[in-house]
Each structure stands twice: as C-alpha cells, then as structure tokens.
Image (tube, rainbow, N blue to C red; front, side, top):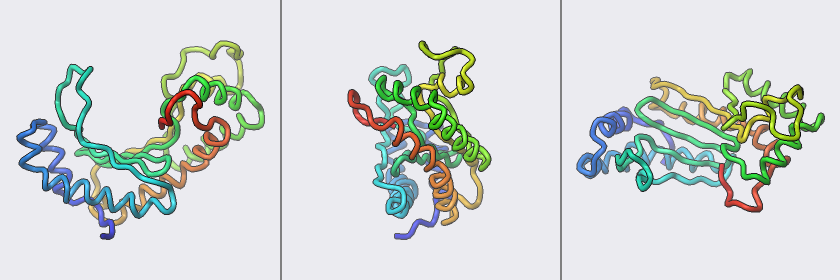
Amino acid sequence: MVFAGWPAEALDFYEGLGADNSKAYWTAHKAVYEEKVRGPMAELVEELAPEFGEYKIFRPYRDVRFSKDKSPYQTHIGAMVGDGYIQLSANGLAVGSGMHHMAPDQLDRYRQAVADDKTGEELGRIIFAIERQEIAVHGQDALKTAPRGYPADHPRVELLRYKGVVTWKEWPVEPWLGTAAARQHVAGFLAASQPLCAWLNANVGESSAEPARR
C-alpha cells in the first residue's frame, strides 16, 4: 500500500484514548488502531527506509512498573527510521533526530570534538543551517556550567554543556496530515537533520559500554 496520510479516525482514536486510557477502550477500538493508525505509519516508514535506513514501530504499551501513572497505553504512536523518530498523537505530528542520550565514552568524544576548532566550528555551522530551516536544535540534560576540564569562557561552552543533541519539529493538526504530503514534511525534516547525524556518527559514534540508544 502507498502512504496516503492518516485519516481523521486516527486522531479521533487518540482523543478517545486520552479520555479513556483503559483496556476496555483499547479492545473496542483495536481495529481502528491497526488500520487507521499503525497501518499508515508502517506504510510511511517502509517508503522512507530506502533513503533513511531501517525502521522500527514501537509497541503501544507503557512500561508502568516504576511509574505512578498506571495508564496502560501510549497516547501516541512512535517509530524510528534510520536516525529519525516519528510520532503521531491527537495533537499532530512530531519528528526528531540526533542523539538524545550519550553514554560516558560518547560524551567524552563529543566534548573533545566540540572543543576542537575544526570539528567544533563545523558543528556550529551545521546547527545554524538547520535552524535556518525552522527546525529546533535542542541540548539534552544540559549542565549549568562548563563541564570539568573546559574553560567557562570557551566560545562553544553552550554546546559543551549538552549531554545529548537533537533536532525536533512539531506540526499541529493540519489538512495535509491526511494526505501523502505528510511524507514530504517528514522526509524534508530527516534530510535537513542528516548533516547533524553525520557529524555525530563521525565524531561520537556508538558507545563501547552501553547498547545503542538514540
């Protein structure tokens, strides 16, 4: 099947789940989830995979073992394709990319690359170019000050404070969400984010101590 967007029933499904996050609601509307929510997501990531990489659609169940909120189901559907993340909820569409979490060995390499004039300035140019396309670039779990061993007046101290760096964009519910144009929005974001992912892969890479985590 060719991706043609998410129908209004997909958004209605999540509005209903937000009001009644119960097994009874899920069971009664599971067919809607499979056909109107998960089906289009599967079509989308299958179309994007040849250009952006392998995909995975996340399970709809919440891990409530250590949470005070015992609601059993996610109020969104999420999927990975390559380095990118796609999310649909009643609020609309969201996409992200980059490294949300860095293990200690990755963080050491990241900071060394940021501090280096050549690779650090390159990262600055990449982020500037991405932000000019109206895509936000966020630092994750930023320190309040420069990390130990780095000067507080370093020209890229803000980047040094990050423990992860991601691109992110959200779109509210728009008519195009129910059409094939939704693919172009996602693909455009992923393409714009690729220079950041390439920089991270080249200068940070995978952790030798922890499983891969984006």
